[in-house]
Picture 1: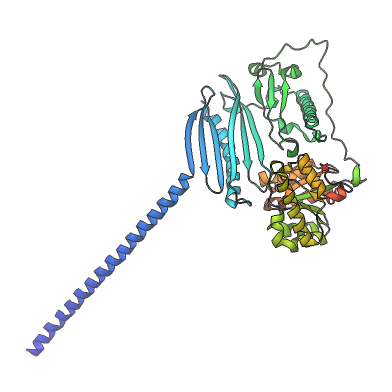
Picture 2 (picture 1 turned 90 degrees about the vertical axis):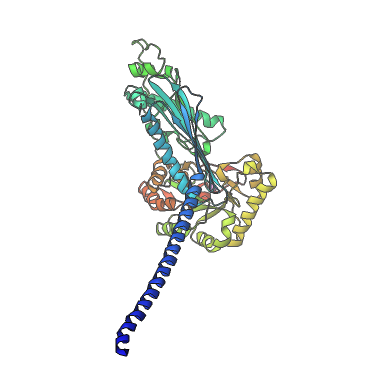
Length: 496
Ligand code: NI
């Protein structure tokens, strides 16, 4: 029997083992799938949580606007990095709504990426976008978008976009179309605009702006303020340096009577009868761009001062390489709070012939601070610079260009001259090297003080283009103190 049992016993043992293996496999499979399910659930929960977080900081609500037939869509984002409120207009025309939303979204995308990079001052960046309708008929709609951003570490932006739409096509009407393609009309408009801007600057007690930099390009779009008034509600820095504040231009219909004698203009505005042909309206000759001035310390060869605010930062050493390679001198308005870890960079600036100015400790609006804080902000920075390079600055630039007699008084007592700027590249707003270069090169005159920020990579990237572009026109690059031929403490300087 043994040899009969033998084969019988073997398979049984084999079967038992097989059963055990099966049970073990089943257990393994159960444990494995248990783990997989648990993992899946955990992933799902995490994803839900992330999705919730993502969507919960962006909220929408809809309201009726106080404009007939127009509603508003509000977008709100409120996080530790940004506080955003955007009001989109919802007009009866989907084409117009899409046009405006595209413009707003482009501005917002730029702001969002700045907010992602984070504020250098541990405060949330703020952005408010709203709109105003100044003219609305069955055929036309004039709308102005107001953009206010404070991204800190730069200058708060108060920009606008404005259009007058043809509701039938959903497209904006250009100023050129409004003027019946009259070149004389556009020249007349520019002359009036330049006069207005110069008058506003005078009224605000500011030095005469370079009005020749105001060109037809700024006037491509218009808004209708009322039946007698064409309006160009420019934000700060749109047509002249932002240190002049917001400068709107308004043109009375009576000033362009002959150019507005066509059906489109008459639909939009209440246009008086044209003057008698016996007295044709004078068409002023275009104001030629004056040659480069030969004033001040620049002497016979034109010069400019490149100034870099808010650093030193991660791009400053690379900027110093560019300046060295091109034999250009610059002025750095540094934040005292950033000097600590960057003594070597400041020493290099000094060694390579650049000037270091005071841009306060951490960038507050000095006009909103008590005197003791103003003094502390300036003094601490002076001391930090002195510790780094052995000498305190003699120039300062107030954050946002915001000065008043009290701030200038503190600067005077600390031996600091106040340096503003005459060419604003708006580099903090655009973050586009080509545009920054174009603004700097296109607007520079001999004696210009050009405002840039070396904390932005795009601004530093624009520097070779700026230097090469201006050098072709014969410009030299010197420090602010050289350009001004020395400075007086407590005096406010805009250009050389
Ligand atoms: Ni600044």
